[in-house]
Image 1 (cartoon, one colour):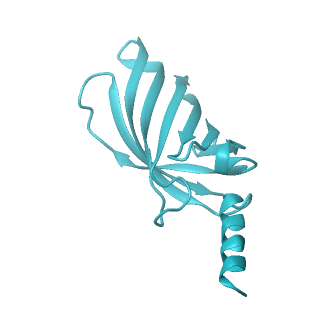
Image 2 (tube, one colour; image 1 turned 45 degrees about the vertical axis):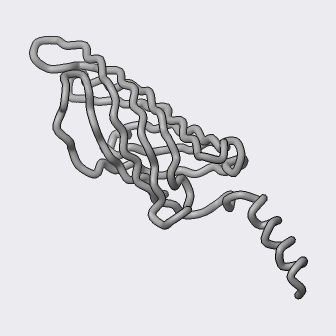
Length: 152
């Protein structure tokens, strides 16, 4: 195969973006604000907004060097908890991805990624989000967190 044909095949492969089905894993670190509704000494619910970055587990992999923004709500009543989060992720090439995260009855946070734009067009994945530890609160009403996003 000559050089021109090889380059053409490589450019076609790059233009197709990410495979539409694949395994993935990447950490996301966020900081944000939370507004709590306080009843007695414990919060029974709060809303939050956070922004942060994503890194790939391998250089230049999916979501590497991206930005993320999340809004959500968590409620705890009578020993039962619910949590819903909407997450927007953007990369440096104008690709965007939308995900919906839900706290399940088993305590796991599941993630449904919807088809996005750019290289994420047509890409749909599901997975789980696992906390990578807790961080001290710097100021009342703020939080810092990191979590690992992986496929199921």
